[in-house]
Structures are given as structure tokens and as C-alpha cells.
Image 1 (cartoon, one colour):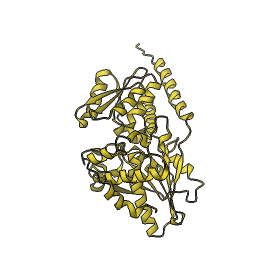
Image 2 (cartoon, rainbow, N blue to C red):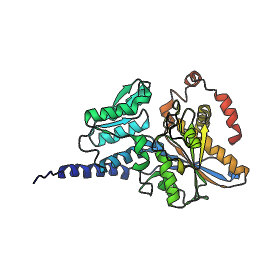
Image 3 (spheres, one colour):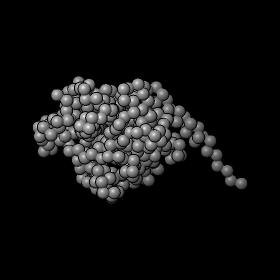
Image 4 (cartoon, rainbow, N blue to C red):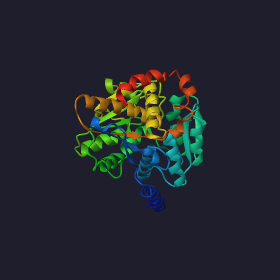
Length: 355
């Protein structure tokens, strides 16, 4: 008789799950902020402020879910190296959880990644593995995981399935619970961007599961493939890659579920940046680029609702703080170098904005 005992591994698994869940338990839920609009419009706009997570962005939820999913599947054990393909906030959040569990973490990133983003990952004990060809980050992450005996988290595949969309403290459950006492408690629309597609999948499934009369709008930035893929029913659609960090992809990712999306809106980068600057002044705090993209679509829907005499509420996401983007979206020299005309964009947006 041959017997192998993996009891010790299960003990580590139990400890790791408890440790990750404890992080959620000691963190307050994120705020749902009313956005100032004229009362006579009859439409209320709310921002789910994900910048208040410990790692400062919406991706904190995703990283927590990915770690729990990988641990419960038996893919991650004591000492397993964690590899991710990300040059953005996901890598920062995963580095945080990897350090919490005592696991080595490597983010595979394009050489063009800003030094400030690399420093954030290093702050949490992770390291950056830079590649020249940005289209090769996933392939390189797979290679590194195989070479080191590690686990490739692969946010772009597992984001839509790692979160329990029926509830269990996901972002959709949180939003609808926080809306209960508002004058329009069931939103007419929820507006989100697509990075992995995981957030839109979670919200779309939850809305159907709870039988809410809420529509889901996914907003896509310039140079991203999701909009064309959804419009044309083409999962092989490609693009050059987004300048709005956190959303947009050069290809349609496996976690994006088109059937859950009621409407898609394509937003020019100039409009995203002009809107985030306007909204930052209105709120008295800097917002990230993807929040600007979300707001362009939300304000366009509000204009439609007003035009048809419809009241109601809209919820969108404040994905991260604009403090990370002082050298890009808030830097006039960077904007000019990108060939972005903010004056023209602001003029285009003006009909959507309150005076």
C-alpha cells in the first residue's frame, strides 16, 4: 500500500484563507459618493469610491478574489511563487497579498512601465520583470511560472470566475445594499469600464440573479479591442492598446462576457482626460483616468434620460486616485506629447455638463 499525506498543506491553506479573509474583515466597505448634479435634473449619479482600499484601487477586490480562488483550487501552496502579467494596479494589489502570505511575487511588465508603478510593487516586496514587447507579457508570465514552479494568476482569464457573483461581499452586492435608502434605490444603469471584464461580468450576473431592472453599460477607451469585439461579435478583435490605465486591452480577454452587456460606449482619450479634470475640480480631489472614461458615458446616459423625461439613478466607479497620474493625465506636457486636444474635447463635453 502506498500513501501520501498532505495534511500539512491543508493546514497552510486554512491559514492562508483566514489571513486573506481577515484583511477584508478589518477593512470597511468603500463609500458610495453622490456626485453633485442640479436637483431639477431628476437624475442622481453615484461614484463607488474604490480608491479607499488598502492598495488604493478597485483591483484590491480582484487580487483578493484571485488569491482565494487559486488557494482553494490547490494551485497556490506554501512558498509558491506568484507570477502576474500586469503593469498596473492589479500587480500592486497582488504584491500586497503575496507579501501578506509570505509568497514571492513577480509582475511581468512592459519596459515602458513608469518607474513610479514599479516602485509601488517593490514597496510590497514584489519585483518587476520587464519585457520589450508588450504583447508578450502573458506568454512570458507563463514561461516564468513554468520555470520557477510558480503559479501564473492570469487575471485576464480568471477575473470573471474568481468572484462569487451571487453575493459574498462582491462589488455589486455592496452597491445595491448601499443604494437601499436613496430616492431611486434600484439604479437605471450601472456604468463600468472593462480591463479584464471581471467587474462587468460580476455586476451583470448579479443584476440578473437578483432580477433587478438595471441595465449594464460598459465603456471602452480609445485603442481598446472590447468595443469592436462586442459590436461585431468578434472575440478575435484586436487594437493597439489603451492609454487609460486599468481599462482597455489590445485583445478581447477571456473574462469579458459580451452577453451580459446591455450597451457599450467608446470614449476618446481626450474626452476621458477632459472629463476627469473637470470632475476632479468639482469634487475637490484628483480622479484616475478610468473614472473620467466612466463619467463620460454616465453623463451621456443622463442627458438621454433628461431628454426623455426619465428620472432615476446611475452608479459608476471611482476606480483609483488621480494622485498616481500627476505625470500623465494631469501633466499638460504629457497630454501635448500625446497629441491630445483637451480644448476640443471640453467643448464636445460641454452640453453634457451642469453649468
